[in-house]
Image (tube, rainbow, N blue to C red; front, side):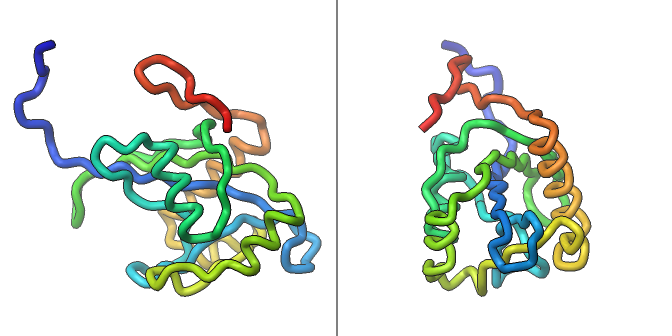
Length: 166
């Protein structure tokens, strides 16, 4: 097999999970699960970079489990966000549908102690997202929320084969 590029450009691949909870904090609002990372300002979706040759959905699942204690099947991509090179190498962030948590899963999040890189976990209703996130993170989450509400999304394929659910 011939390589198309002898020296491919440096690129990051961010994998994030969009997880919702129904009234997790008693507010009677549907809320998104966000993390407060120590390395940046504002809240973000759980997630992080994929390692070299790590399947993207498994990277999202690894970060989600580490940061929140949840292990969820992640195969549907709600949104893709391309970030051109600036301070960091260019980036492509994929946001996966983590779905609506059951009360048992919400309890796992409540009891989970996140790693040191995460200050805290937060449930944030849609109307408060803009107040707690940077503009780019807010737009990414708002787009994912819209896709989730409308049943939109794309299955992740690995070499043309859909990733199995589970």
